[in-house]
Amino acid sequence: MPEKIANSDIIQKLLVTILDVSIRKTNSGFAISSMNDIIQHLRNQYSFFEFITVQDNRYIEDETKIFINKDINSISTDNLGPALNDCISMMYQTLGDQAGHFFMREVQKKIGDTYSSTIKAIGIDLSLLQLENEVTKKLK
Image 1 (spheres, one colour):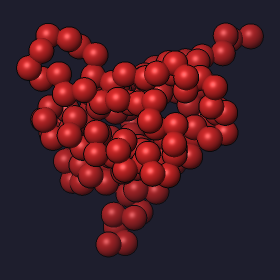
Image 2: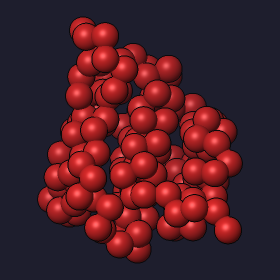
Image 3: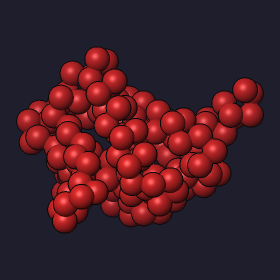
């Protein structure tokens, strides 16, 4: 049986992956600023987003862009799924056409099999999110 992955590790891997893909599709400043704005906005809805900090490290040599306080590990994964779904969708919408058609697929590929199955188990289906966002875009 696979070892349970800590919430902090799941969130770290997912948000860093989304940020890396977003940086590749736009630029570092826009992607980091957008992710920070989304995290700030979601703090109003999900109090545990207080445990997440986005750092603009474009001018320093530190690779770490997102910091997760380990206190987030006490949050139920039932609450994480909807919150992270909202975060992913908001980033996709913020990127708009720059996200491209295969944004979610690229995130899923880059995140790897272990994390992909873990996030799916907590209610995050990147393929479904891709489809929902494409349908929403066509209806506008």
